Image (cartoon, rainbow, N blue to C red; front, side, top):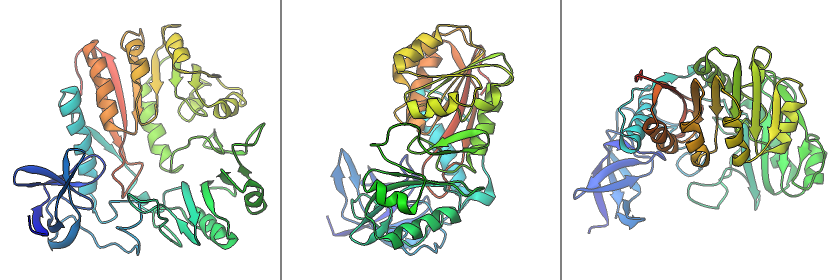
Length: 389
């Protein structure tokens, strides 16, 4: 095969790559957009799929935008900064619909929730690497650090923290979370914790014992070193979509609850029980004195599912989904199941098990939590009875 070949990009796939065909065979191309006609490197098969790199754009997609980031295409912080809205939104909805079609064998038409004012400058949490005098995110598909002074997706306070880190000269890996409406900056440092603490007082490390630094945002604790959404500002959209999906009721079980992001505000109006693996997050939620929050594993989740006739069960599992507890969920007596997911493929896999047990999709929303990236967040509600969505 010649060193270069032309390829028409038909669509994007989960992960964000463009998809075209070479002699009828699927070929994936990073940064390719629907409608692009590109010149590519010689395709090479990896993991059973042809892959290639763009060497030149012959005819640009009508959805291709000019970027103002000097490291875009090298830095792994985002992959769709060149993908214009509203096509980017439609692509994300299409990714979800495709996963349900292929995996769950259901046709769906997901809704869309976004804040157009927060397509940039939205990130309030990021993991920065510092190595060999370079500070930023890892380069795409590499362990090399892309040296950046500021990221267009980061909130100004997060970019300020990156600047402070750069001037410190410290090296390592640092998860930084900023309060976009307050003064707090949390840093989770796996090494050099004492040196980091001299610069960022609210620093914790895995070696620390006792309570971790935290701050309240919208009534929920944000705990250093524990999971929080990448954008506390866009998290308001996700929380709103989840609470709408939960609906009315007197009893809510919140699984993979973290520090009570979804349920703490509801604890004053209904009986709430939250379970999570992370003891620091659970301690912070329980410390507010609203609802009952306990640390536990999936075995504890299953016991809680069967312990009561919950009006609603909410779950927000990690990317790998909730396979271990799906049999219990499928057979539960709850009126409604609300599943918050950051991976449409595992959501569709778990939804298939619910469908097979007689549950139907009542609503499905795509929430744009990660603009300019291929990451997709969904809120799906399931009920027993005739299909609604």
